[in-house]
Length: 116
Length: 114
Image 1 (tube, one colour):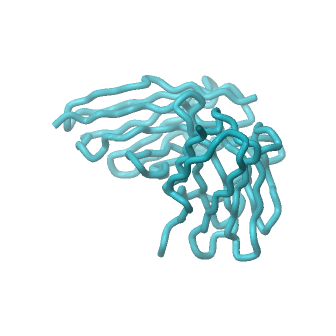
Image 2: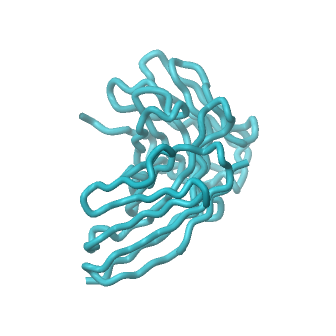
Image 3: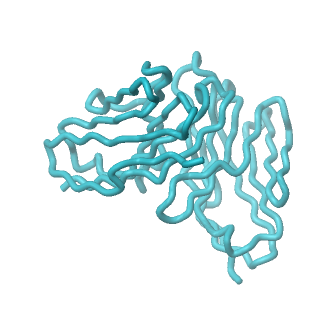
């Protein structure tokens, strides 16, 4: 069974631009969560989607948004990029809602975003 | 909100020795505590987890203990091997209706020396 895939793996953008990251969950998984990982702040939860609806959200500004499609694939968008948005963005999938604490989540390899 | 502390930040052990990593959390509503291993260039991988109704869980060389009263939980790796070298993260999570969940510790870089 293929794991969680994320595209692109690496991305360079400049301040003020916007970016869209993509995540394909494990086949059959319906929940997708997004995380930001930085050396300074560590791993931080962004949001979780299930059945095309955002079910849980972390403490990030509105510049960070996401969506989920009917095939469970998810995209994350960051608008008006700032230098501090440079990070590894990780996607994780699970069968059901991870935030209901019933399901294990499996992480993808991440997209490394560099904002210049 | 929830705060998760993790110690030590770095840990070096000789191959075959045991390694222990400790985490404390602040929110008594947290009731699920997973541990992840992250190797270079990869995403975190779940290695073991424990729920609040259990005090200890073991899976081969890996074990986790939980003390809900003291709000701390620990990862124990016995008979360490070089392939155990990685960054380990603990996390604390609470049910969705309690708000934001899955707060991670800052990580522990474990080096197993051959």
